[in-house]
Amino acid sequence: MQKALTFAAVGEAATGLALVVFPSMVGRLLLGVDLTGVAVPVARVAGNALIGVGVAFWAGRPLIGMLTYSALVTLYLAFLGVVEKMTGALLWPAVILHLILTALLMLAAMHDRKTRT
Image (cartoon, rainbow, N blue to C red; front, top):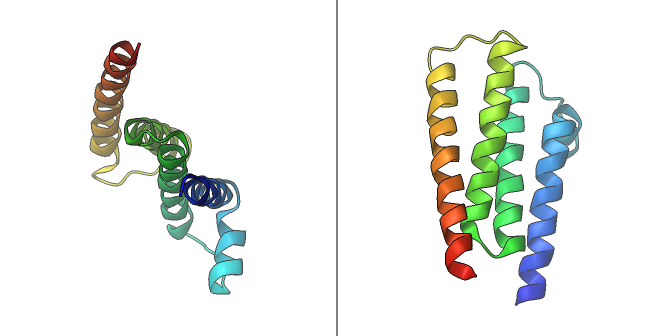
């Protein structure tokens, strides 16, 4: 069972990384069309989620997977606002929410690490 979970985790993380780095190509290979416009950042957020799923199952610790996803999506959404100049009404509230969530998950992970040792 552990080998199957590890295999699935690696596959999901690899797919997530491909979505983050090459979203249009993945769209073309999976759906037969290039991803354009708003589909590109949405695909990258989904890719970050798949990386988080992969980390959670590979490490066997859902907390670390959620921390990974939250940190990655915080950085990416902030990048969209600062560098790409995207201005959706919920962009910055989402960045702040994920920043808070990342901090709380980090505290939980540090507490979990202390109790494991």
